[in-house]
Length: 132
Image 1 (cartoon, helix red, strand yellow):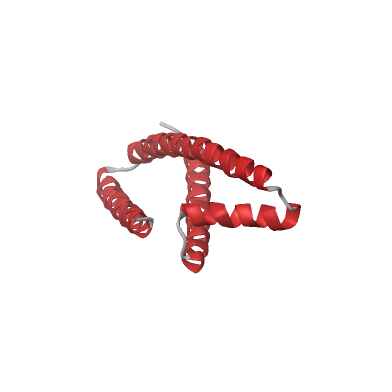
Image 2 (image 1 turned 90 degrees about the horizontal axis):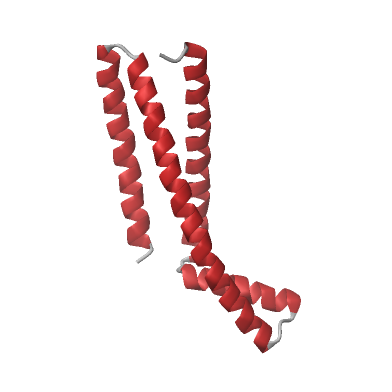
């Protein structure tokens, strides 16, 4: 069984990560809502910014659009992989925390996990709905 200070440190680290993810997600959500555009329009706005600041030729602009499209796919793949790894680490941590608790605490902890997962699922559904 992990000692309490290690468990505390890991819990604190996970809390900081989750907090950062929530704040980052909220920031992105606000930016997305203010833009009211889909991914293509955000990409276009970046292309427009490159165009205005770098005075791209038509050929350069077309090249930039292709480059960004290819990289967006790569970034998406990296994001999905990091999400999978995050979920693995989160499950491991939850198992270690559960192991360190007594039976009554485990029941309460499982309820906490259920609430947290329900909130995350609702947010995911909301984001997916907004992106359609």
